Image (cartoon, rainbow over all chains, first blue to last red; front, side, top):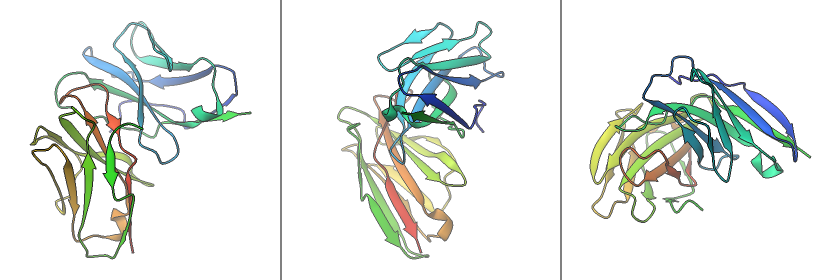
Length: 111
Length: 113
């Protein structure tokens, strides 16, 4: 079972920042937070991951709270092509633990 | 384009039949993963191979089996097919067995009638 809780859906205006929340209150000290997204029936795509520090790459920023019980994925300037289901996943980085996908958040970017 | 290829793209078959789905990982990736995505179950991990050896097993039915060949391509065999096996089957690959980033293929859509 997924160890994360996400809102089922969100809307965002094109050009605005999309802030997608994720609760992971039972996260362990060695578990990372990963974000993937899936654009309609395509294979999921890795976005970003982090342990406790905030992370930023060319796609998004990841803000993790100090107690690590929740995080927010930020798409700074959402476009229509960002419409997708976004999955927040917690997983240890090493070892053979698989990615466990929950239901995710369906983000709709509106023109 | 993730660099992972899957064939066929679509497959329609009857209950009780057997099918084989094929996956070629990205060049240089040693680990292959199989996932099943159905409307009611979401995206579920089935099995992982690393350099030809099974590394992790998820919710894979006994009617399903997989293998990874010396050239690192992988096949997922589904037998005694049931209507409920209709789903999208994704293959993903990563550099090693524990990489944080998995690259997913475009999927094979299986329809069992």
